[in-house]
Image (cartoon, rainbow over all chains, first blue to last red; front, side):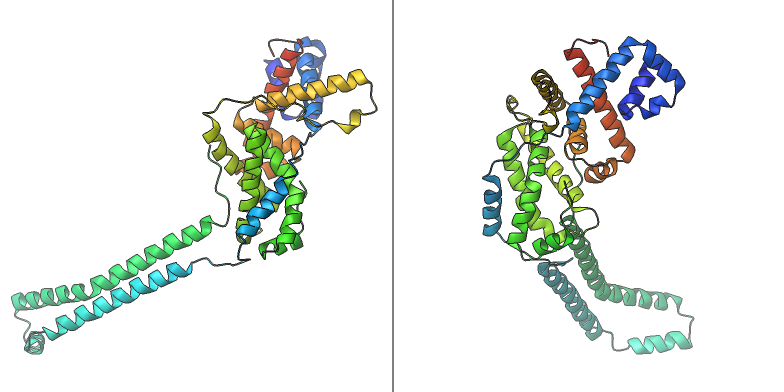
Length: 180
Length: 189
């Protein structure tokens, strides 16, 4: 058990400073040949790793990179959270939705019953017509919904496009999380 | 890897190819060595290094400076390398390069026998590094070969700090066990 603890502590801190503060572990290290062998092997690993051997890439690497870069130069620092295509698409969708809504509103107004204002007056003067009032309200609600729904749908699509466009623009800023 | 100056990065972001050539010259060795440790193949490492540096050029305008450039670059290389590695898994492994481990100048004045033994130990240890699981190999490479701190590794790999420390400890333990086993010191470490 103490062997396991000692080796873990040495693995976390190969300098041995953590172990040095614990007299029990120090005594164990002095008396356990296997742990001493582990400590010696770990010191050898540290020494070998700390040598930081860096291999040199081929001399052709940098020219190859610069040649590839010359073929496709970037446009410089452009902070564009949304692309032009996205803006045009959103504007077109919103405009279309507004035009459709306006047309439907116009049609529903043109098809208005000529005596609808009389019905409204009667409703105010004599509120004892619950069934007629209910029917009138239902009709008005349907017409309003016909006019407003396309506008709402257009705005919803525009908002969705904004979210997708913004997410896409953010994805290009930082490399993605490594896959595990 | 030393952090490039803000001026150099700004010039690169503005599309200055000469500045980017300077940047490539300063980072290519580190990118190549990280790529080699990931892929364990010289040709593949060169391809990955080239790909990573070309992507760096195109992605630099979107680098916001929220993290260090080196951290950002390591993350890019590791992401590309892991994707590349997944494609290479089906291929048979090639033998490690002879002499890929560079000489350590601190041993130049020592006994030839000591030089040989130290070089042999380095070769054994780095071969053992190549045999480690990807997650351990990457942290060992970034910590020892690239001189990154725990925090920089955590930022580069987007891992919790304690996970990085645990990966390093496990990797060291595996390497020590491997070295002790090869040297015949103990078989049951």
